[in-house]
Image 1 (cartoon, one colour):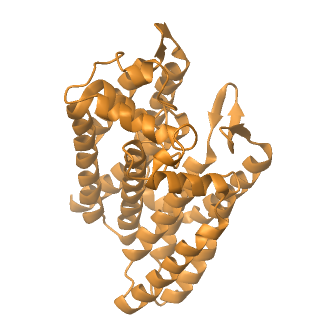
Image 2 (tube, rainbow, N blue to C red):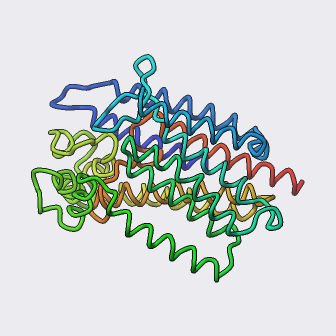
Image 3 (cartoon, rainbow, N blue to C red):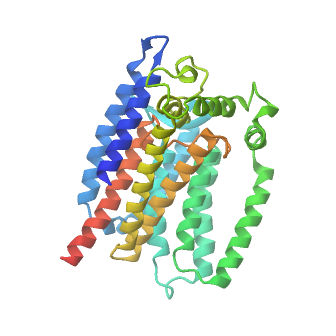
Length: 353
């Protein structure tokens, strides 16, 4: 897992270094900040690997409450970027609380859902967890950050479905979710509806909301089998590709490293997810199992949504690609998540010994 994570980080740095060139001028800001975030993230990953994950259960509720307060604070005191007020500015660096929220919700839900059936009935768990999830999701939508809200809802649904719900209650639960999902269209903002409409046909507005998708598809397709080479992508180097260092880093990789470079990235993600599945399978208790599953779901959703929007099979949602996209908050939290997984695996080894 560590080797695969380091390989993905290396590919991400190489792509970021490449897209930092514009008309033969190198902007080192993104590259340097990403290296600093990676070093911090690796340090946190090793610390969490040595930390007993079961201790999170003693203060998971406090973590949840603190996170809600931070989300509330960022709406009023945060920094706005690209129409979203979702960052705290600290000495030239921006911290995005929603990335921390994803991991905190996994820890909180793992401890909440692992309670014995005689402590909480299934419908108490459904009702309580729905309210507890709705609070941070509502605050995230206020920023607004629709993509991150979808990720957290997906984590909640996935963890709940593997927590031991029976078939009858599962059918009722899924029916409620489907009704809520389709009725959510009424609460979407106009630009969010446009993204979904242009996902179906981006050529409805090729110069407006469909522009990003079209340019991303062109970039991926122009890479061919072997790619144009690092630093030689026309879409990324000439700034046709928007947000090439964050949301559309995969399109930049596809253009410059081609089909085989993209296949390598997908293969590495596949190995990473396989290792996560093994850690979940060998977890010593239900909390460790649910944490592993929650982290795996977080990675799967972000990988699918990000790559999907890069190749035109998912609407643009502003979700970073784990370990590859530029963004200190995302990199640190993803590496911290891997640290927790290592902690779960280490405790299993100690049990076997």
